[in-house]
Amino acid sequence: MIELRRAAAVVFLFLGVGVALHLLLEPVREAGQPAAVKAMTLGAGMALAVLGIVGGFLIARVPKERISSVTDHLEDMARRGTIGLAISETEADALGRLGHAINHYLSFVKEEVEQSHLAAKERQIQTKVLDAEKRHIEAVIRAISDGVVVTDAFGDLVLANAAAEDTFGFKFDPAVRRPIEEVITDKGFLALVDDMRETGLFTSHRAVEWIQGAGGEARIWRVILNTVVEGKRRDRISGVVAVLHDVTKEKEIARMKSDFVSNVSHELKAPLASLRAYTEMLVDGEVKSEAETREYLHVIGTETDRMSRLIDNILNLSRLESGLVPVNKADLAVTEILRDVADVMASQAVQKNIRLEADLAPVFFRVHGDRDMLYQAVLNVVSNAIKYTPEGGQVRISTYLDDSAVVVDVADTGYGIPPEDAGKVFEKFYRSRHSAKAAKGTGLGLALVKHVVEVVHGGRVTVESDVGKGSVFRLFLPAVR
Amino acid sequence: MPWKILIADDEVAIANVVARKLQNAGLEAIVTTDGQEAYERASAEPPDFIITDLQMPGMSGLELCQRLTTELDKPIPTILLTAKGFEIDGTSLAHLPILRVMAKPFSPSELLANVREALGIRTASPATRFARSGVTGS
Image (cartoon, rainbow over all chains, first blue to last red; front, top):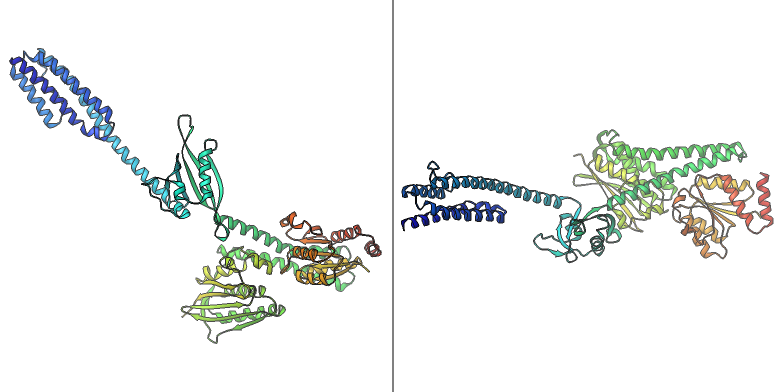
């Protein structure tokens, strides 16, 4: 009877060890791979139970004191949550052998538990790193200036960055998955994404030009579409990534450059045509008198100068913009510059029967600036005003003080600038279709004005215009007090 | 009566040199320096031939040709001079009596040869023979 009780005690003891192990492995299980750890814990518990039952029968004949010392030791281990040698193996009896087996098993379990702890810790770190990386990548995607839109296999929107939100006018909520067509309404763009999802297995990368909107508000996008392909045979599309790059400005610059080259070549060809024609006439002996010969040679000289001037203008602006022209600033009177410009332009105005008025204040407003550059800037504005004003019109130059700026107004009764062109007239190479019809030019004059006034002198230029009535160009220059 | 040829070019130097070349060849040349002026002159008294620049302020050479073709009973054969030859597409020339587009810079002799060829294709008249003999004689 006593032996039976002892055996039962040992069985319970080992079950206790099993439970202790189970508790020890609790944090490991929480960290990950629950199935494997659970199996190991269960295995360990069962093995201990079997050992306990077998051991119980063997120990039945072992002295009570030794059993209670083993019991104390195991209870102590359970209490402290440690795994270590439990039983003295010195005795050669059944308990000694059992002790050896248990110790051997415990050292194996201890090693396994330690490794599991290490692996779990490593996984925890990896998960944290991955989380941080995911957040970092998302932040990068959110921040990039190109629009990014990502859909899943079902066409639900899974990611969109701030640029995409601006482009399509919506607010992306990562917590709510909605079909892309409920969020984005631009049919052209939706068709691109749809088409990519349907045909993406054959062409996983595609770059297309897509025009959003129409008219002056139209924006041109280069859309790069990629499919995310999954599966062992890569036969399943799990999503579409669309990146939108705004090329409106690039297209505009390309157009302006092409227009500029075309204008410059036209302007260069005009004097060149005269040179060729007059030279040929001289060579072919079409000239009947010496006076005629002199006249022809004079034309050749004038046209050569004209060509050279045009080339100088192009180079000047280019040099000015690249900062190669030295700026010589001094305190100077704007009124004097305006008077000089009015004198120089007078003959041109008379030729076109245009009344050129210089309504200059008796007060000499002073600015700190480069005289030659400011003269050129004002000259360009006045010359333009005369160029784009029909015969019999009027051009008026005036100056006044506005807060801390000396303002130069050049008002004409010319053709005017359509509102859609007004904002662009100062851009280099830009020539409105409207002005191109009225007179020739390279589209450089006002670009130079803007550069001189705004970049060199820290002022600003504006234009107000009314088609058919005229324009007012206004140059604001910081005044010297 | 010599053939009457209207010249339209806002480059006065070009208009003058073309006129001189034609006059030396015994043709009558009328010089205008913009599209509107050319249109008014041609409407009032249609010439036998037009030599016009493409890009002119106000009215382009193409518009000039279009308007005259629409408004006059008889199309006037035209040679278009241009410094932007590559920008003209065939469709804008369709249904217009533009015989040739000559790129600037051009040779006055070649221009004259083209004018003579064009006039010679038209019904022969004493004036044509006069013009031809005038040119070969010079």
